[in-house]
Image 1 (cartoon, helix red, strand yellow):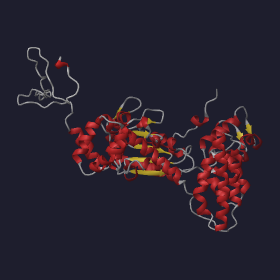
Image 2 (tube, helix red, strand yellow):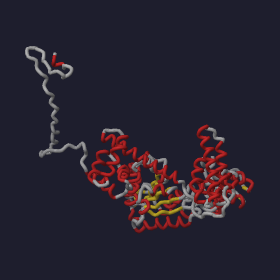
Image 3 (cartoon, helix red, strand yellow):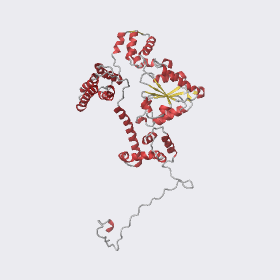
Length: 486
């Protein structure tokens, strides 16, 4: 089986990274700052869409600097404890090279800590990861790189991500840059590729260097020459268009049929596209007539989607798609063209934030219910609102609750309405760690454990005694006789 060209020609040095000279320069400058000690920003965040060279740049940087590398990606267990044991401990210690030789940081020996896909760290399986990442960002003695596709998803969990890191953005490389890199790969493989074929493959990649290399390999295998006709075999490959391309075609190009065609290339359900159109329609169509016609078409699309849900007949999807794309695009008669960025659906943002909040609330209610021996429903409706108000004013209560209910930093931050790296949360966690364990018994003056105070059982009144086995007579109205009456 032929070797994968994406691995074979992966850049081993930053100089080989395609299409992002500014980002590469910033990354190299940050790495050089470690040669004079620990820099102001101990961690760097590489952000950008998939396939633009973020992970490759991190690995190439380690090779250029002669650093070892510790990498954790989404396939690894990345709980707080796992990150602490692998990344955090490695970030505080002196390091060994990949050959086992000890390398002192005083002599320039470093270990690069890489957390790939760091924006997807926060499911239930990764609980407790954020406090450890905060500690890693602020206190590491080794260089750290966090790689993300969505910086917002990571930054909304912690203020340290914004204030204590250097953020570097990687953009999609241009078709010309990709074409130049493909030409070098083809020459190395002894394959002659015509310029128009290279351009076709590069354009078809949509800025994804990995996809371009795979396409080149697929048409070049078994051939010594590749023409435009050969490249056209993959030119019809569906390139996933972004939702922003579709919004541009609907609202700003006045091309109804192109908008309809693009909806088929966007890998999204019609109900999701409808939310985008609904969010942006009042901002794009300012003329009252345009707005009325646009919403008439959009409401008709919503009716078709309702029939899909009720009847489970997905043939109505095509009618809904036509109305919300070509129909809305055709509704415009005015000349106004908006130049602002398209808006993400507010409804989706609310759902996303609500999901995170609901998960945190369920976790807190479960722990409090175990501690207080009651139901999670009662905790949610009666206890939690009062407890939240009390925690904001009572530091001692925070520490004891963390210890007794076994809360972590994320739980406490949710209850107080602050971020996990806030001062109040840190102080509460430190104070809780210094409190004695609940299982620890108090000691007497001789050092021995003092006996627990005796708890007297409630004294029941003695039953009336019978004299000479005569029955005891009770006043009227005392109810049924007891066993002692016989």
